Length: 161
Image (cartoon, helix red, strand yellow):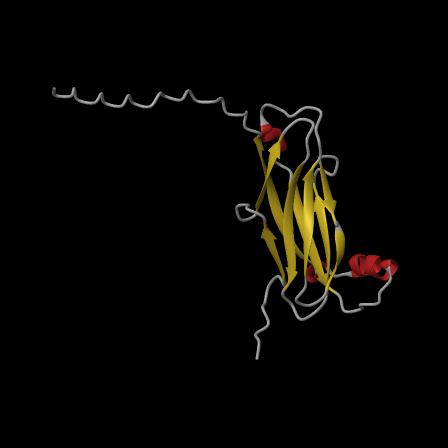
């Protein structure tokens, strides 16, 4: 018989990120994509929402949805192309994502029913997980290193005549 986990039933997996932090490479004019995987480890269906503190800087797809028991979904977090990237990325250090989930059992629910479920949910029924953002500048292409000439081969010994 399986044990039911207490605590958050939604497991969040980040692609190559430190725990609780999503790292973006900041480069003017280019997007940076990161993926998180939400997995519903509970026995109930779950609704989810992914929110950001900087909606003009990031796009989230899908930003909300539902997950059946034992199902997973990939959520793409996109740092949108910026006209200019600040030299000091500490300006962006306060950016965060919040993932909210709520147990929900009505699989045939309309969008209006789902919206009402979020509005009417008691605060203690909503699980929330926060992810910090970290940013690094894109590395400049490395300059080619000079290649040292291979050591000269020793000259053959003179032949005896």
